[in-house]
Length: 268
Image (tube, rainbow, N blue to C red):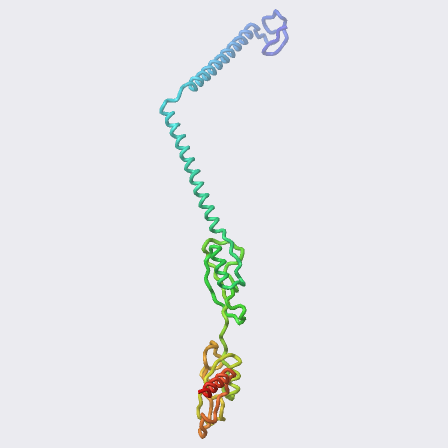
């Protein structure tokens, strides 16, 4: 059976033309053969092209690089090696400096509060720290010369030779001057002794009642150091001799001194 390639009609084996469309079986066979030949040529051409490409590639791979290129590649490798050594050296130097910096900035601040100033400074010197003193007035005698505060808290980290400010207690000797005007000399002396102020007495004739404080050299309410002395002006009568009739009440300390002086005079 022959099948027409055009209309796909079945024909007898010995038929030369299609009984339906009259297509010549001989021409169709020639066309098929030509098509096969063309396909074979195309395949062969592709194979030749592929072979030439592979040959060209293998030839290029086999070609050796010139000597100049080999020298340049060696020089570039050497430069890379040198740069690598430099980087490693720099990393080592940076590491050493970083360790040094860490050691210098990793000093723990000791606790010196409650120690005397001398003990505190010795502890700070041992820790490689510097110090400076700051005074703070206190009325508690037990706090005198003792470190009350420190500028950096204990346990914190700081660098070498960092300055730590130590607040040290100093006895507060300041007092407020009381008002003794109009008091008798005995009352004024008693008031001044209570606040710890020393005094001097001068007399002045006055019409006021005798033995009364007319003036005080430092005004009342002023803050002074207890080592300062205040002068009291006491009234006396003009008719009587101040040296014979007027007398200044004395403290126990002054009376003891007089007794000692009297004893010396008696011995003489």
